[in-house]
Image 1: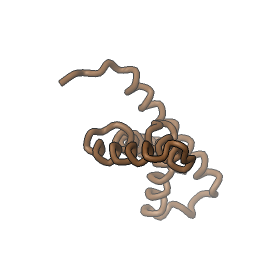
Image 2: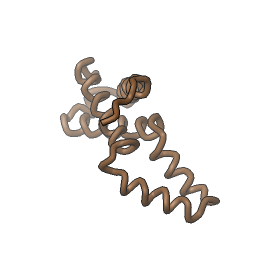
Image 3: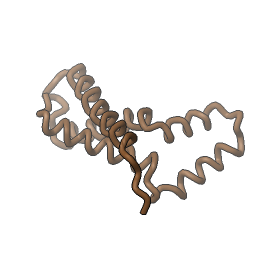
Image 4: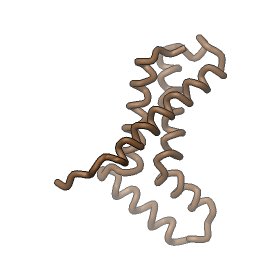
Length: 113
């Protein structure tokens, strides 16, 4: 089982990765191209799926949290230290922390530069 501090750090990494994909201006050109790709065929269910996944904080956050957790577990050699069910619970914890941080960020007032 992963320590609580490590889970918190992984949740912070999940939050940051989610913000990068969903909202950070550095990826605006890529997101603009994806939205233009979607607009070219609005009736495509596959394109709807991709756009929904990449624009939903909770959808992409879930998958990024799982990828970050799996990367950590494999890189640190901890994958075989616990049953897969325990890693599933850890995934829920990391994704839950990421979602909580995203929710807090959404409720904070925005500052105009």
